[in-house]
Image (cartoon, rainbow, N blue to C red; front, side):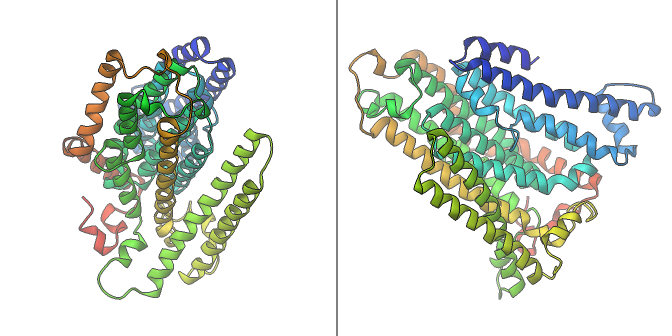
Length: 481
């Protein structure tokens, strides 16, 4: 129902490279969907002895709560997770996204980024995690790590883009990673932030792609080099674009800030952040300092490889690697090496002399993320994600500078007309939502918080994870809703 109409929108009315983009989008999505179809059939067949074959989701979920799938549960969760990871898209299943977003017409891009991507996150919550909680709980650290890699990688790739639409596409990849990071953290605060971010990201991204489409209609180009000084002739359009861009990068007072802040805070508290302990009154022990440094090492270990991949992608676009590319690649690899050495060193300081590799092998037997060294993993993920927020902000501000205030020839014709009445009325509802959600988010938070708390508590109980209160340091237990 989704794939075929979107395929036609992209393949018929897309840009010059629409056929390749549509083919890649179709193959990626169909491959994941077929694997999920096989998993659906196996799941229904495996619980048939509890009352016959049925495809009713509520009934199948009820049966799965009493069934013992054994080793098949991990494979079933993997099939569902792969299908939804492609739809989000989650790193490293994202390579279809930039081409599809760049080649699709403005309306189709809005559908892809603002609507269909959220169905991937919804699928994780509704199906993959809920139906197979035991397997999912063991893989939540891996899911959070992939989400953070996507956050950092998307931010770095957005920074090196010369095409405005691709820049926003990679920034969107980074923001979708925040949603999945909040899901992986599995606390009330992070889960509520993910739900709010789904709505917020849909509004901001839809508005941003509509404005980019309006710019392309005027100048017939998405290249940043073809713009400059537009604020002179398009002051209303400039003000609207700046407002929407600020909401996308998470400026306090606009809608993008609320969800990202809740996700980061909930992720820090997910397994007991060393930062929260360090802020507690009283002396700080050596073990707490080591835990904080361990979280920092995890952040370096994630940021380094992502920076290398972004630099290599930029060099490939230009056809050659400059000295700056080689230097930044060396620095990024050095950061990754420091992170790797740091994780091993701080395992020793934390009382785990066997090192990180042995602990990785113990994930599955640790009792749903019960191994102590990974109590600081999510703190490190939150640190890396916070760095990516800064990178996206710098990138977006640089694009605004080049578009509206930088040097460039501004032709005195219809190609630089200001915001029209039709465009203004189209954007008005999105702008009102951006301001309302940012200034007074309480009604939305009151709506999603009970569901977020119920989901996190129920998932932890069904999967055998420790309850929420036991995951938090003493200073943070009073702060967690």
